[in-house]
Length: 282
Image 1 (tube, rainbow, N blue to C red):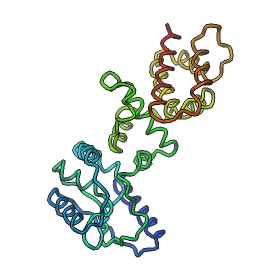
Image 2 (cartoon, one colour):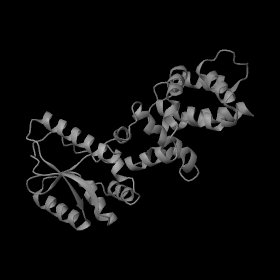
Image 3 (cartoon, one colour):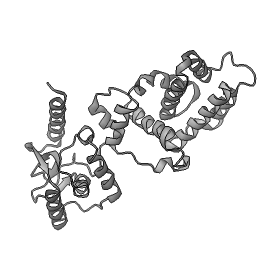
Image 4 (cartoon, rainbow, N blue to C red):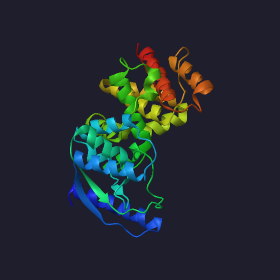
């Protein structure tokens, strides 16, 4: 079965399983291209019927619109659009706004006549980046890999324009995460065993551990044993010389690093280890 057809079949199976668990009659899914005019009409019905009263995050809709113009949208959005008996949108509100903003027709799986009581239809704006990577076939550590993709990209491409303290506010859509992994960081999942070892030995966050493993290995690509020696010294402090900068990093993690979470904490930990690497190599 072609990959695109298999992905469509997988989406249908997930929808059927969720619907069955909700206890409702199964709605037939149909494929449909939604034009900007169609999206405006559905949104107008939604506003009139009042079936989706929660507010719209237009910044999020604009980010989705950017994704819709770059060719990777289908890879990151396995969930169908769900319409109630009024024709109002129950699931997919921000995607419809994105179609209007982008002025690009998009193809969706459509479920109609959805009862308002169905509990499995979430009010969240998107599925997670980990869900998007799962649709690509990433088998494990999806959450950590997605967060590390963001962290590595911020370090390599955006740290000069975006101060490190502003990194938590940088939002990545699912499609952007998918594109970055596929086009820039395809080999990043190969470093998850080293991530596990570094996290265990140093106490760094999983995204920082994976980003550190990847970036140090890339920086030492011309001398892999050198990069391996540096990371091994962080994981297990045996055989470190007095004055080795890795002692200072390990002491900091022992005092401050354990328990810190979030992108800012991961960015701080990444910066400390990269600084240590530069000092150690020098």
